[in-house]
Image 1 (cartoon, rainbow, N blue to C red):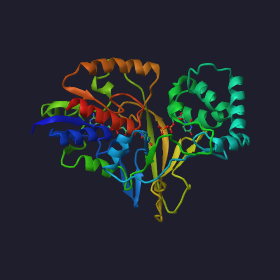
Image 2 (image 1 turned 90 degrees about the vertical axis):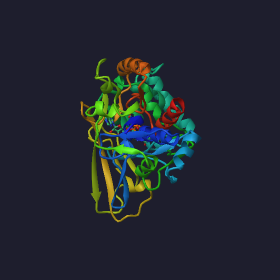
Image 3 (image 1 turned 180 degrees about the vertical axis):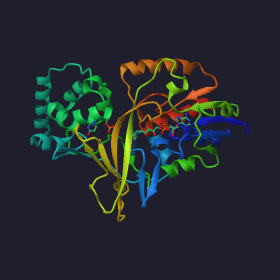
Image 4 (image 1 turned 135 degrees about the vertical axis):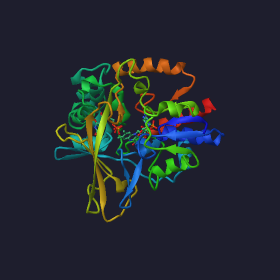
Length: 365
Ligand code: FAD
Ligand code: UDP
C-alpha cells in the first residue's frame, strides 16, 4: 500500500492533518505508539463519566474559526473553568480576581486591591521581571505569590520560581472584577461525550495503526509513504544530536469513589509545596454529571527521563536555544514536516495546535 502521508502521532495535530489531507484526496496512514487515539486529549468513559486520562482538558479559544471547526465534530457545553485553590486550611478562587483579593486581604474594591498590590510590588523593588517569581509578584503582590503560586509552581516544574521564565505565570488572567473564569477567551466549553469521539470522527475512513513506535518500524513505515508528518519529540527524531531537550512529566492517579460528589468542583489546586500533587480533578463536573459514583484524578508532577511521557516542554532560554538548532535542521527537510506541542517544543494549548495544524494543511496541500 502506498500513502501520500505517514502521520506519526494520533493526537489532535496529527488527526486534524490526516482528516484535512484525506478530504483533499491524499491517502494517509496514522500511527501512534499508544494503544489509543487522541494523544493527551484522550477521554475514557468510566461509570458513565468521561474521564480525562491525561489531565483536565478545557477547550477555550479566541479564534472563531477554530471554535467553529471543533463544533463540526461535537457539541460543546457551557462549562466555564473556575478552579479552587487550597492552601493549608484556606480556600481561594482562581484566577486572581476580586474574590481572591477579598479572601486574602479583606479588600472590597478594585482600588483597595490595586493599592495593596502596588505596595507589595514597591517593597519587592522589581522594575522589569526577569523570572517567574518577579513576574508573579509584579502581577499580584507577595502574599498571593507566597500562598498560591510559589509552592504550586516549584513542585509543578521541579525548579525554583526564580529559574523559570516569566511567561508561564502570564498564562493566568489577573482581574479587578468578581469573575472566577480561568480564561479570557471568547469561546469555552467541554465537548459533550468527551474528546475521543472527536478524534474518532476525524480519523474515520483513514488507516490507523496503534501500538506502533515510529522509531522501531521506521524503515518499513517510511518506505510506504511519500512524506512524513512527525508530531513526537523533535530531539528524539534527530537522535539527540544537539543534546536533550528537557520536559516535565506527570503521574495520574485515578480513583473511582462510591459517592456522588467528592469536591464540588471539577478542578481543585493544592498550592502548598508539601502536598505532592498539584490538583485533583473530579471529572463528572465537566459535564454536570449526576451519576451515583464519581471519578477523581490526582496529578503528581515527576521528573522526566527518557521513556517517560513528555507532558510539558520546559521553555527556558537553554532549551529554546537547543530547539532552535533542531528547527534549523527541520526547515531543510523535504520529506519530513513537523507539528504539535512536542515537535515544535512549545507550551501550546489545544486551540493553538488546531490553528497550526489547519495552517500546515493549507500550506502543504
Ligand atoms: P499529543 O497529544 O502529545 O500527541 C502526540 C502523539 O504522538 C501522542 O499520542 C504520542 O503517543 C505520539 N507519538 C509520539 N512519539 C511517537 C512515536 N515515536 N511513534 C508513534 N507515536 C508517537 N490544552 C488546552 O487547550 N486546555 C487544557 O485545559 C489543557 N490541559 C492540559 C493538561 C495537561 C496535563 C497537559 C499535559 C496538556 C494540556 N493541554 C491543554 C494541552 C494539550 O494537551 C495539547 O495542546 C495537545 O493535546 C497537543 O496535541 P499534539 O497532537 O501536539 O500532541
Ligand atoms: N499556577 C500557580 N498556582 C495555581 C495554578 C497555576 O502558581 O494554582 C502557575 C504554575 O506555575 C503553572 C502556571 O501557573 O505552571 C500555569 O498554570 P495553568 O493552569 O495554565 O497550567 P496547565 O493547566 O498548563 O498545567
